[in-house]
Image (cartoon, rainbow, N blue to C red; front, side, top):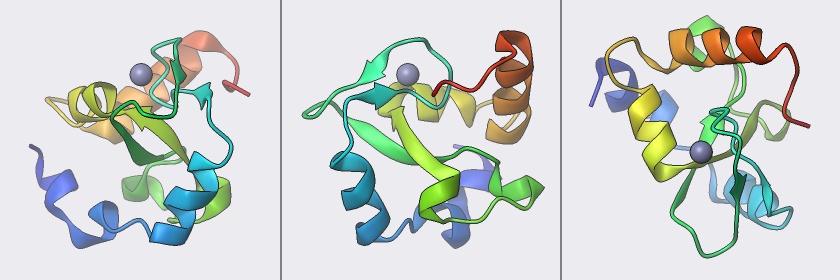
Length: 95
Ligand SMILES: [Zn+2]
C-alpha cells in the first residue's frame, strides 16, 4: 500500500458518491483494465483525475475500479502515474 492510499483524503469517498456510482453499474473500470465493474464485484471508488494532481472527490471525478485494479494502480508508481499513462495510451476516456 502506498503513502498515497494511506491518506484520509483518498480513502474516504462519501457513501453518497459510492451509492451514486453503484446505481450506474455496470461501468468500465476507471483503471483502464478494459472490463466492466459489475454489481456484486469487489470494487473501489477511484479518482478519474488523481487526488495527487488536484482531482477532487466529487461525483464527476470518481468512478468504479475493480479492487484488484485499484490496489495494483497504487503500487510502485502510484495511482496518479498509472492512471495518466493508461489514459494517454488509450487515447480516450472509458465512457
Ligand atoms: Zn479493472
